[in-house]
Image (tube, rainbow, N blue to C red; front, side, top):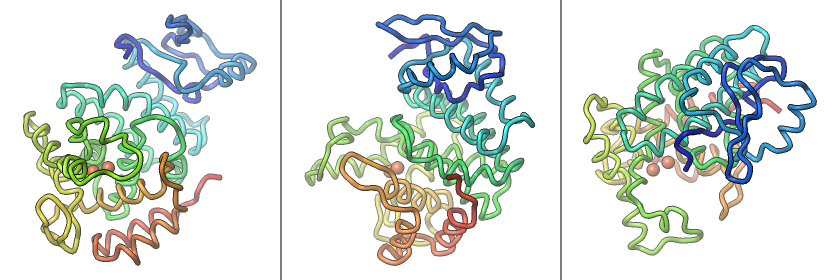
Length: 314
Ligand SMILES: [Fe+2]
Ligand SMILES: [Fe+2]
């Protein structure tokens, strides 16, 4: 890891816009200033840079993180940028911040740091409702490790909005969804990364992650019960045969019922090394028909409207 720098996606930087921070290129284990604060990128340079952007190449100093976040915020409030570009910039910039969040041993700080990101998503949903559709269509396509949590959070915000949640509730939901799998920190990497089936013992380990998550969250003050529930109850099932508590229907916290849906949906539609991703419609149809009974039926209906009544970017 590189504690002094954090990774950014180049696509968050527009050619004609001055940056307020230096951008570094990582070559041969050295960080070289590629773009000075205050400079603009020429079209030619941005094309060359894009060719080099493997997702691993461009960095900003951790000391400049606030500047980068403010800069992104200004971009997504700009009238010059269309909702699709805004959605793209916001998602890509969040992916970059995710890694840092998830490696932070201070869970309270990670949760606090995630709030501005979640708020930016909520603001964008309010100011440009069509952006949510774009955002969803951008999910599941790139190579970062923390996509799953980010995507589950984005889907959950869309679903929460469709269910009529107010901004404050949406913020709690977004944070809860983002950290739903935090307990996987305590499951061994061999199990998490294993290709193919798990043995019974490994599966037992894996199924402990909601409890591990609760223990982690309980160890920090001021974390709401709703956020804890999104983590501890997201593998419960509407019909009562989930884990770890076998709660039934509305005994399960609404946030956890939402994450149960968006978590499964993301797993089904994302490319993993060992499966072929399902098309969005096939995934929801399967959840409705073959997995009927596992999810809150009204929420599943709402998920359908979130996914299919929105314009999808091509
Ligand atoms: Fe999980
Ligand atoms: Fe998950």
